[in-house]
Image (tube, rainbow, N blue to C red; front, top):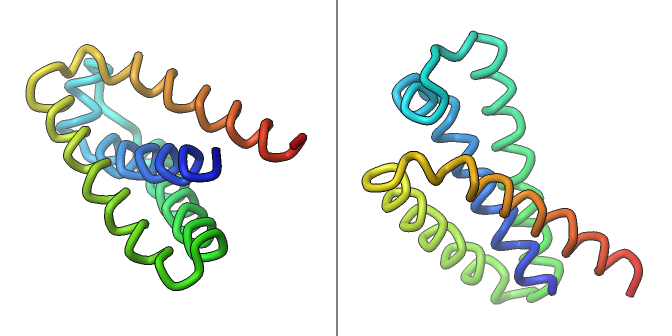
Length: 111
């Protein structure tokens, strides 16, 4: 369950990095992001990417950084495919990803 949380946080972070940019935000929401929204996306992205890295290193010790690199590559690949071919699915993938983050963190807290 810890690996799912680490990957979901990484996917969330790179999606926030993408949504902080004007073109991607416009493609998904059909409006222009405000400066405050862009900065908020960047702050959330940096927090979640660092949290994912810390969880990987704490969970896997020496192999954590390698695992994190793989999560980053897979996250970017998924987002490239989403933003290139199915931009309309980004909102649904975000909702699913955030629910996975919440559920996996709740399971880890209780068990």
